[in-house]
Image (cartoon, rainbow over all chains, first blue to last red):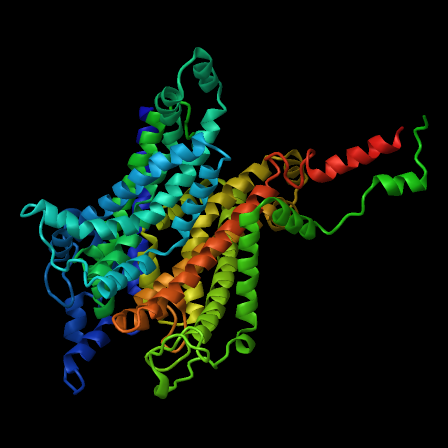
Length: 319
Length: 320
């Protein structure tokens, strides 16, 4: 087991390298460099004489690409310096850390609320296979996957204000000042973002529970005379949920995508909104920094998920 | 009791065989009602996309400033938007955009998956390990971020969108193809082919691809809904189709949100149609998978399927 963990962590190093290279190259491929964008911003319609060489030197673009990459990586690894934002001039790490709690909170809400609905419903639909409840819940779960979150969010913004004159809160109240106000703001985007997650969870839970139900130990439990609740909750659920937990751990990227859309619709100042602003302003260091930060978080969550899978299910070995 | 059959008996015993895909469609219609709904939705989408110019009552983006933001009426079935464009026509043209981007991006993504997955599995060794780390790295970056960055690099436009959606999707799907190819590599006749010196590409083309073809078709059928959803999501955020082209996502974000107080229905219809299309294509993909999977009992290729039963019945009748 420890050898597997060590091997898995060693695999992380080339993956990390590729993540940084991909991030670096993706943003460097922009046609019409950052200098042109700065020139356009400064001139604002008129003409202005700027010293292109000075700006290029300030941005560090006059050295070859691999030297730029080495400088950038060493900055991150040695000083935790992700660079400075082009437009705002502040260190990128500060900007990210400022907005990170909001995004994490929204992501956690989506995960928890989505699954709080999905888990009991998934167990019910597996326990009552092929009945009317099963068909209804299965259709609902596919519908939840199919309904786009941005449409639901837009409808939630529009129709309550048209019918009842109510609109979601716009001002962000920090959690420390007023927990209830904070929760009030996050609950609606959280529910909407969680719907797709809950649809997928319901389907996976149903599949896994049905597969576990055919096992011999479940038949033994029934033969012992245990009632349905005990068989399901004490024996079946524990084994069925291992792949489900793996899916939850690996779905961080998808959740973040939904969070970006929700922040755009409900104007929540989190990292998704920062990313969209950076894309609008062509603030390349910031785009690069945010993407790298999120990639590293997702990578570590995948690592934890993989390791915990072998811990939870000792029969599995990825040799 | 004779062991030889006459021509008449043989004709009686072997039922007339329909083409394979018609058998599949008939099974879907008979056994899976939701799958049938999905099939109808997909067929309608394709028809709406191909014949958009004939089906839409008004030409695309025809501005009619005399009649803006009107409610549904007999001339404009779903009303008009702020520039007087007919909403129903724009939804049909949006269907065309979604269909083109959805199917093309799925096809392109399958091509990328096959190239990466099959080569990586077949060559094996160090190349395989490095490619897998590369694929892992790509999967770590959140999908929406890759798409947004690529669209902001490449600019707005349909070919750019197809390329941007195909590459990450393809790299993600390559894992599944790789595991399937690894399974095929273990077949004895494929090993034998390698032993007599079959080259890499003939091996892939003649042996590996035909074996994974059903898997590819299934994976493609299931991916179409996701591609349509991603296209609308990107258009919603403003990084999708160019401004002149109607797309359900951009209809939702442009006219829907701007005029939400006056005409909330502008935001309702594009999203509603989008939901139905994605639901239908997902259901169709599910029904296809349930029917085509030979491991499940009752699949079309199985020994206990309906054709086998009919054959047995007829054999039993004639052997009296």
